[in-house]
Amino acid sequence: MSALHLSDTIAAVATAPGPGAISIVRLSGPDSLRIADRLVAPPGSSPSSHPTHSFFKANIADPLNPNLILDQAIILIFRAPHSYTGDDVVEFQIHGGPIQSRRLLHALLACGARPADPGEFTQRAFLNGKLDLVQAEGVADLIQAHSERASIMALDQINGSISHYIKDIYDNIMTASSYVENSIDFSEEDFPREIFEKSESLINQALGVLNDLLASWTQGRVIREGVLVVITGPPNVGKSTLLNTLLGFDRAIVTDIPGTTRDIIEEGLILDGFQIRLADTAGIRDTDCKIEKIGISQARLLLEKADVIIKMMDASQISLEDELALKSAINSEETLVFANKTDLASAPNLALLSIYSQQIIRGSLINGVGIDELKKAILALIKSKISAIHSFAISERHYSILNNAKNEILLALDKLPQKNTVDLVLISSHLRSALELIGTINGNVYSEQLLENIFSRFCVGK
Ligand SMILES: Nc1nc2c(ncn2[C@@H]2O[C@H](COP(=O)(O)OP(=O)(O)OP(=O)(O)O)[C@@H](O)[C@H]2O)c(=O)[nH]1
Ligand SMILES: [Mg+2]
Image 1 (cartoon, rainbow, N blue to C red):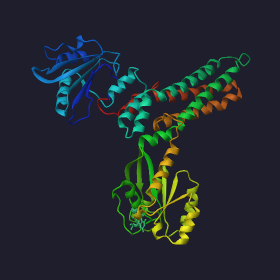
Image 2 (cartoon, rainbow, N blue to C red; image 1 turned 135 degrees about the horizontal axis):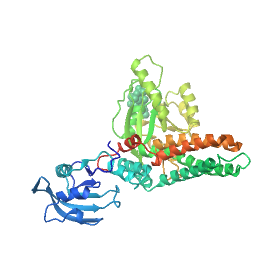
Image 3 (cartoon, rainbow, N blue to C red; image 1 turned 120 degrees about the horizontal axis):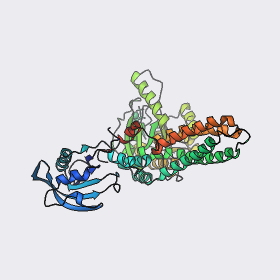
Image 4 (tube, helix red, strand yellow; image 1 turned 120 degrees about the vertical axis):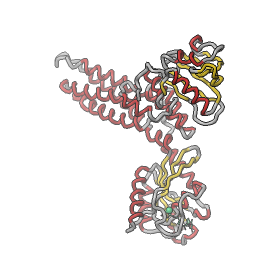
């Protein structure tokens, strides 16, 4: 990406391709008004004669053949710095459809604009100080949001919910770090010992906010990517039947042959507004079958990533293994136990299950029994993971950077109470490293590579 060249004027279609009522083509950069002037056919007034935040109707013509009218347009003028990007921006609202927008885009390119890269308008907004990197990431999250909850969270992020905390952490560590650095040159006798207490208090404040942000990560992942719910258990207990029942259509093959499912079968599902990734897996057992073995090891790997595990058993054949699995499941925060096939279960087995009635959901999928109870339990588990404490939620990128920054801060904090002037250089270097890391979250510190990674996930025109 020729990312950092703010002197170019960039153009792109901002609306989704395909038929629609209106298409919007955007132009941003120092030559926007001059380029737009070349397209407006007389007797329309030229865009450069209009003040910022004004709009007017005009015919736009092919710059190489001014007699050829391309479309009628509403033209909007935003002069720097009062635009989304901070550049001079001209937006053309024209008739919808892919042909009209493509013709206008080609005309703009012929007049000297360059095609915009993905996310380049938002990247310019960042480079021009209109928003920080966390807010820019919120824009991408908003466009990609699959649920109402995800879009609310993204909008909060654009409005600065996370940026505010990152700035807090950054400012406190910066002040602590300057206290430490300013005292490095003092002699042992004149040394202002109170800087240790002052710095410690600032660093602890920063650490508290940082821990709060870290704690919001699970919630964010669950809302943005969906909750991973994995169905597991021995072969033939009805795992694939459960997947099909929850989805409402036959996605997985169901037979009475143990070992039917081998590959992981994952499907999306919305349950009470929560996006769920529901996965059916191979039944877990000792087997000599090469294919089944691969399926079982894939299932085990997926279980490690699961947010919710539905452990299924066959109520008509409760093995010692089932009982052991049950005991470990009871202690696990993410596991629900579903005893299926109660229609086939003997009286002693039903009696045994009733001992665990608080921990086990009993059902008979073939008769539609137990499904509502299971859905309720899944939702309760998801809600317990999404506490109301956090109105914001950091992303995976923020999480890993904050964790590294936390390590640096803890190393600095570890040296402080010793009130040893020898350690000042070391403390200062840990604090500097933390600052550099935190700076890459909001973009106080950035490289072209970092911007490329972030903005490449945007669409063209945003
Ligand atoms: N009687 C009875 N049979 C059921 C019930 N639920 C599922 N089955 C049957 O149990 C058999 C196995 O079901 P599956 O859903 O394929 O089981 P699975 O756990 O996915 O099996 P694998 O893929 O082999 O691990 C099928 O014949 C189902 O029709 C139930 O509630 N009662
Ligand atoms: Mg199956």
